[in-house]
Amino acid sequence: MARFNKVSAELLDELKKVLGEKGVTVDPEKLQTYQTDEEGNPYWFRTPEVVVFPKTTEEVAAVIKLANKYLVPITPRAAGSGVACGAIPVYHGIVMELDKMDKILKIDEDNLYAVVQTGVRTSVIQQECKQRGLLYAGDPCSADSCQIGGNVATNAGGNKAVKYGTTRNQIYGMKIVTPTGDIVDVGARLQKCSTGYCLEQLICGSEGTLGVVTEITLKLRPLPPYKFDLVAIFDEDAKAFALPNKILKAGIEPTSIEYMDNKALKMCSNFCKVTLPHVEENCCYVIITVESFDEDELDKKMEKISDLCDDMGAVDVIQADDRIWGCRRQFAEAARDIDIMFVAEDFVVPLDKIAEITAEVPGLEEKHGIYTVTSAHIGDGNIHVLPLNKDGLSPEDWMKKMAGFHKDLFEKVYALGGKMSGEHGIGYKKLVDFKRCTPPGEYKMIRAIKKALDPNDILNPAKIVDLEDSI
Image 1: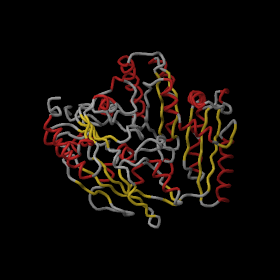
Image 2: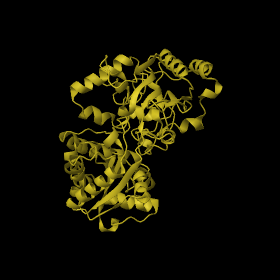
Image 3: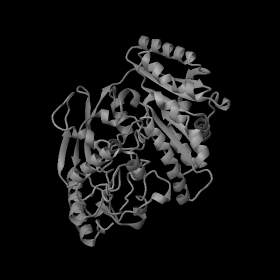
Image 4: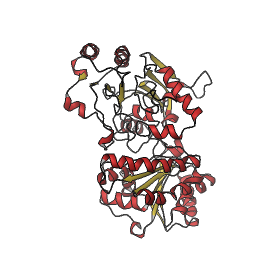
């Protein structure tokens, strides 16, 4: 793009002065590893010109100031576990790898908060809290591989969002470096605040376009000592989709309500090499977790949910053991094992519209000649339909097919009051779809915020919005 410059020898010299020789690489083999995130379709791949490895907030700020000076774009990168091409360097330039900033700075057990650097793996935070009898409630399915900074960037959700909310609900505040290189603390460790704009909430979910998060203050909770996991097995999807509202109306607050269609169950059980009950009878699963601080209360809730499942026509209600949860957590990996170019849809609709939107999928499969598998966080309306390129189309032909599928799918999602992403973000992959589906007034506001905070479009350009586009 004309508005960006190539990485020059002068810029490389200045980067090395800030970060040292080991903090900068232009090795072609290493650069290749940063051409994508979890995206497997080479159609999207872009190779950076240089990768930098800052270790402090001050180093991040210095790199961003240099990028503005030389008009070179920066793509911030956490673990690279995203599926929306959010960490792909569309305009090449600099990839800023943040995994060196990986320290838990503080866990305050009495006051229920933690301060962590951006590169700490989410599972490490969970484990350290659990050892202290505490809960960090953010729980994306990729917790073992993703980093907390990436969770903040995408406002990651996961299995526990129905009770605890997404990453946005787990944050008190954060330290960021703005697109022009200023170091700013946003948010505060308060239970409520009506003091100006809520900037920490704006940054969360902005996908690295409005600032680089370097430090986060997280909310913690006491860890409930008791829980149960049930799986309700249904022979009709419509029965399964009616269950979440029944549970909520009964006054039960589940930690998670997860759905897997029959095709997903077969795919995942084959991948995990386990046998699951009733799968060969073309049934679907709803996995329900409830936590409590009172064992007697938990027993009553378990009995009530079992009765509700029976009333809804469940074929069987059994304990959800490690086999079942293992299959649910391996959903994306099982799909990748079949097709490295699988597409992870992430749309979200009101709970009462889940049955209606999923009923549209078979018709879309037939129209576009595709095969899909589905899992969902049906407790919060977040549906993951995964189209698989089982016919072996070329990357270009597969993307053309997906473009037509998305046009029809998102039109139906938005008509039902939904949105195209519940937790993965827009990234580069849904850039065109997002502009098409977003009301003009809303899109204009989003674009204006980006332009105001990042006048040179330095941070993660072509993610969410592209400032090259005319409105």
